[in-house]
Length: 221
Image (cartoon, rainbow, N blue to C red; front, side, top):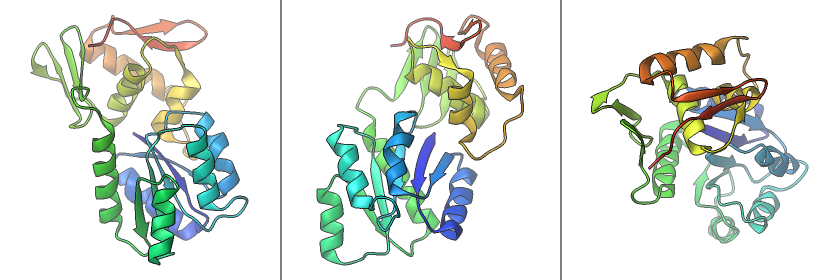
């Protein structure tokens, strides 16, 4: 699952990225408020972690711009501003949660999980494609009722294709969802993950669109 971290403190940003990646999240990092909207145009983010005191555009202004464009992505403010009026202002501007610095990375991760659980509408947690069932929240996959063991990156590829069913995702889109902007990607890594998914889930599940990318075959329920 891909997160956008907006934080201009390089040391804190590095620590948060390490903690979040250890939990299996893909994290992209920017350090300016005026880069928030261009970053979100790329799509594929499940949640935004947003500092307030940012260069380029203050965090609250970036948040208001995001909500004015009707983007419903969850936003958790991470800020050293601890006054009651600051927290009220952040929540009234469209934030889903407000965490005051300094905070424990474990608490942040717990809040991220809680917010992502709430985002899922009832009845949509399990996706079905024929005999294949995907429980994105619990990170479980079964085929014909039998559990299938997928690596985190295999699961990430599968979920990207499922969530964008009906569309062809390019190699670049899938790789960004896997590794984020700041990580090196081996030239054949994506093809290896696709190969493993086809081997574990059936060769007909993922369709190759030559010269473009990949799409999911079949219908979801």
